[in-house]
Image (cartoon, rainbow, N blue to C red):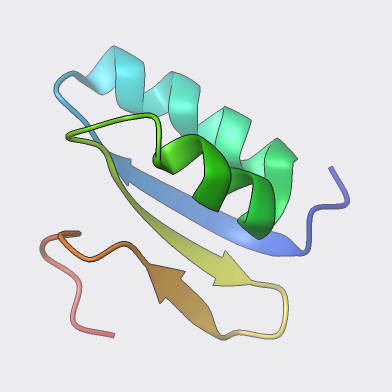
Length: 65
């Protein structure tokens, strides 16, 4: 996918959901991911852009970037 992302990590209530969402977020890119994330309570995401910078949702745990 030409999404401008090189990595997506997702925290969700199950590993299966996190795996599916990480693929979706990667394909959607950052803007699409931000929009979808608004509809998914309890899901947190960390995206790494192709330039090496990152964005993470407010409650993403465990990464101190």
